[in-house]
Image 1 (cartoon, rainbow, N blue to C red):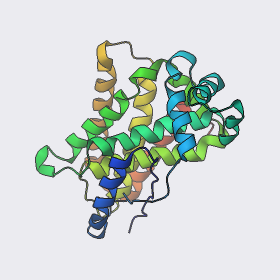
Image 2: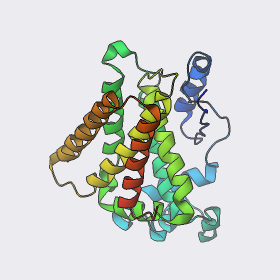
Image 3: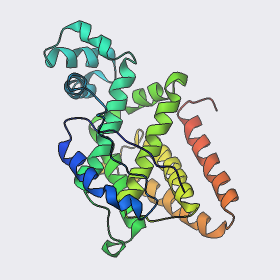
Length: 252
């Protein structure tokens, strides 16, 4: 059975937490890894500070200045910066976590295949997540540089895996074989490369980013239909992830 990935919820997203709790019984019927965890990802103080700091990112970027501004806006003394030993990585991760959780908030129950098919829902949810970067896209290369730092590599990759898993779960994917792994690995690679492409996209409403994503998604589906061996397919997807990571500056 594929491993279950346990996620944590910030205190402020109570509706999403309740929706997740109502979904728990479904886990006994399929391999989806969405599992409720009562432990919040952030304390109340961390949540209010980081939420305030995010509003300064468009102006100051993912920097200590944005974090310090958030601390002051939240009414805390400068010493509150000690709550974030990872520094600005905490700010980047907060954006990743809250935008991932927003997907389940907007799509509280897994989709039915009859509503348009799993692949269509995967496309819709992935593009929804990508468009959530629009307010800070001119700062996202700074975030990618932070995520690519060796000490942040493991948690960054883990968060990418959580996002891919979340999207497939909400899309109604009910895989119970090796495709559980390959679909998530494939989407992780496609998402990482599309996100990087988006930082250079100047087209209206990021139309070229959507086209890029569609081409990569279709190519992955075609390859999956052609490659019958699960091990070979996994190897292809692994190389895709490595290429995406290298494009972000990670030495692998």
